[in-house]
Length: 248
Ligand SMILES: [Zn+2]
Image 1 (cartoon, rainbow, N blue to C red):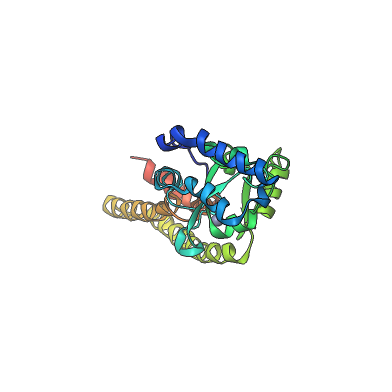
Image 2 (cartoon, rainbow, N blue to C red):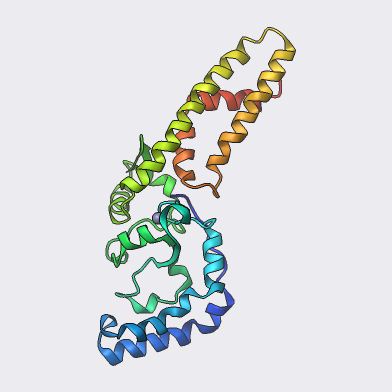
């Protein structure tokens, strides 16, 4: 999970949110409860929040990834418009731009109608997840700070340590470990360079390796939060960075 920035509210929502919301509330009143609205009627009332003009800026804000698990649709099914505050319990939030999150089908199903007003979880548009979570090997864990409870609950509610997420983390971890070993050797070679030519060549190779590994931490890369957290604690990576950043 990484921090996301919300884009401006789409015009179609500004123009229609009140009307769509009133129609839904009228149906809730007519049937007594949200859950009692007949399926077909409910589908017609809710279809609006999946409008392409709403989906496009929402999905763009997360680089087409799930806001919770950072998977891409190829791994986890379609990205859907998720209601952070569940619309089934709080229909007032059914067409609220600030309540929409792009979520994969698996996180969406896992979160289901969890009541985030009564039992808050991390909303990555509002809280920087790097302050809440760290990784222990391939498991995500809450930091031992004021965010510990919300972190624990988020992991539980969104199933962030399920096998479907630990498997890709394990694959990435193998690549990161290989990078770490290779860059450690490259740093050693650089430090043992006995000519200026060798120093320059080895520095260039280190720079290329860093550029390639840092692609994994780009916000558009899947599971970028996991990769970033690894590199932050990778001593050979920091040694290589200081060589590249030192122009001497
Ligand atoms: Zn997900």
